[in-house]
Image (cartoon, rainbow, N blue to C red):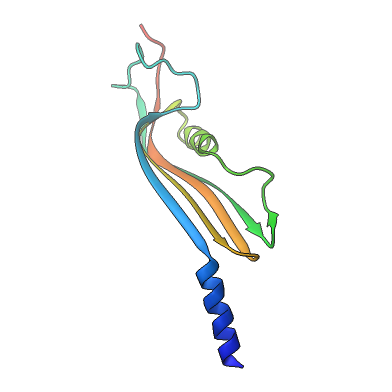
Amino acid sequence: MRAPIRVALAALLACSAGCATHSHFEALSTERVPSLGYQLEGARRVPDVAAEVRTHTIFWIPTNTHSPTLQDAVDAALKRGGGNVLVDVDVEHWWVFVPFLYGQEGWRVQGDVVRTGDPD
């Protein structure tokens, strides 16, 4: 009895898959922010703001109607920090899938949120 269970668990583990990617960006924004003429020095800065968006799939049924995107994660971080630009940003995207049982996909961003002002 125990051997078939072990074989089934080993097969399930062998079929499961996952992946993660990490990236670093100097600046990210989902708002229109001109790159020239805006001062980041001296602007209000909220350090180490992190935001994560994810979706789960349980028995082929997704918990959200759309997959999370990098834009969703950046929007959440900007809202949390009250700014319009993320600087010195670490980005992580991952997905994990165990066939027929469970899946997860998500984005995580972490960086400083800056509220830029209008150019002089």
